[in-house]
Image 1 (cartoon, rainbow, N blue to C red):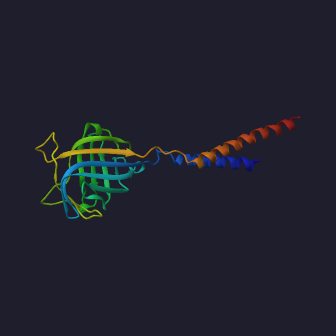
Image 2: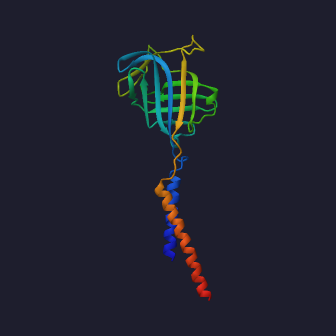
Image 3: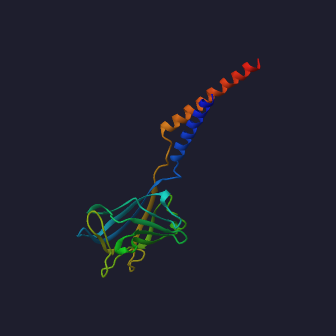
Length: 221
C-alpha cells in the first residue's frame, strides 16, 4: 500500500514539474524588431533610402535588471538586397525611466556601437524588455560617420550606414524615424502527455482511498 501511495505521489510531482516547466513566466521567446530607412552598403553593394529591418531573437528569462538582453540570434534585412545574419552578439537595452531603447553590437571596434540608439518615445517609458509592445514609432539615430565608419559584420559582408532618411517631423536633424516592436511567443501550455500523466496519478489516488476505507470498515466489524 505504501509503495502504491509513493508511486502515485511521484507521478503527481512529475506532472506538476512538467506543467511548471511549461510556464511562460520561466522562459518565453521574444523578438525585437526595429525598422528605418537608410542608405549605405551591405557586402560592398550600395543601397539608397532602403527600408532596413533589424531583428533580434531573445528570451525573457535572459533579461537582466538593467534591463538588457543579448539576443540568441540577430539579422538585418535590407530591401532589395535580402537578409543577412549579424555575426557579433547583439544586445537590446532599455532605459526604463526615460523610454529609450538601444540595439547594440557589443563587439564592433571592441566598443559598444549602437545599431539603433536613442529611440525616444513616451510609449517606451517603463518598458522592461519582457513583454510585447508596439509598433512604436520613435525618433532615433544609428552610427553614420563617414570619417570613422561603423561596419557591422554579417554573413553577407560588412553592413555600413552612410545616411538616414530624415524624420519628417525633424527634417534638418540627422536622425530618422524608427519603428520598434517586441513580440513574445504565444503562452506555453502543458504537453498532452503531461496532462495525461497528472490525470492518471489523480485517478490512482481516487482508487486508493475507497479501498483503504473498506479495509477500515472490515476491521471495525
